[in-house]
Image (cartoon, rainbow, N blue to C red; front, side, top):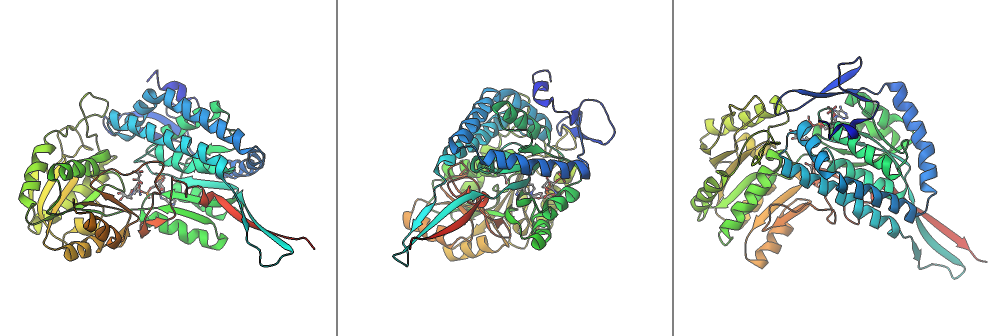
Length: 477
Ligand SMILES: NC(=O)C1=CN([C@@H]2O[C@H](COP(=O)(O)OP(=O)(O)OC[C@H]3O[C@@H](n4cnc5c(N)ncnc54)[C@H](OP(=O)(O)O)[C@@H]3O)[C@@H](O)[C@H]2O)C=CC1
Ligand SMILES: O=C(O)CCCC(=O)O
């Protein structure tokens, strides 16, 4: 704890129960780590007003000045990666290796957008009149707000804040109530790097009330949200009256298809990587594995063998690669999906029950003979449950994979290049991993279609949602 405390110096954080503060609990031990202050309505409005002033000053800096500050922030995160990862494991539960990976991932967005800051170029258009020059410039949208989830307490903030700050916006962040400490730690380093305290602001409290202020305050011009589709839809609806720009990164129901010509070892590795990342609590985690009937048994056998290496425990312990789930509600959802599948004819090959380690621990589970009629085919489990479906033809599996209202990530394992293209084009998803279970990085556009959301984060496209285009027409006559 001593190594972590320097990142938790913010006046909103304390280590003894205090009025108007909420508890942050370690999901592995259920111990209280810290208490965080709820931002009052009045404070929130003041912070938004101050962000408006800070944004104007920040936007008047050169792109190079902003980029240099972001670079420094990136270096500070890398330098303090180990204690930051430890803090994340304590509040979120993911194993330390994954938390270290998430800190690298978070930092990668800051480096990427520091680089992009210098390439926010406008255009000169081919004019329709010889006497006129037509130009487009790009300007920061202004004060923005982010609402972020508990599953990636640092990366989801960095993926939103880095493009916003790079192009000259301000950002207020409301992190998930379960994981606010990583947000404060990131902000602490941002301030050390030279990002003004009024420009990048962490706020906490009742999510619906903060969100209502974000959607109604005229200074907030854009909201970026990652979380459930239900809450995303609510923010969409509440933003309508004020026509806010929105980025919504919502739920998924990712299919992973293994064709008969796939490299089965690679496919099994890909399934493990995608399914059990963050104990299954990732919106791009595989939710449904479709295996061709001719390789079904072989793939099941390989998965049973490989799953023996999944070690459940407190993420801070050596060798543990599967931490607890975020809370007991998450465990109940996994149980519900398993019970439903078993009652309709599936059977369990690995796991299938809560662990004796504690209320939030669930054994990594493999189910076979799963069908489209079961709950797990329709809903995102968001937990360590790997269901194996069977298919016969390419057309059939494409239809099964697309039979969902979600469209975030999908995965295909096949060695046939023509099939890779055909199936990727037919899948109604924002992202397709081909012969890989992990495809997220700062260079790639992350986002979905259908109920999985709006907009793309990361990549060269990631700045667009934080910019307004302005058209200039100069008459030379
Ligand atoms: N796309 C993704 O990455 C994620 C998807 N999910 C999906 O959502 C399911 C439920 O997870 P859950 O944590 O409840 O997700 P939520 O959508 O409830 O939470 C995500 C963020 O939204 C905030 N929030 C909650 N209610 C509102 C509201 N009325 N208005 C505005 N913001 C709100 C939360 O704040 P607070 O923490 O204070 O409630 C948190 O900061 C998961 O099982 C999973 O299926 C969840 C997390 C991430
Ligand atoms: O929305 C999520 O679940 C976090 C994104 C994980 C990723 O970027 O791969």
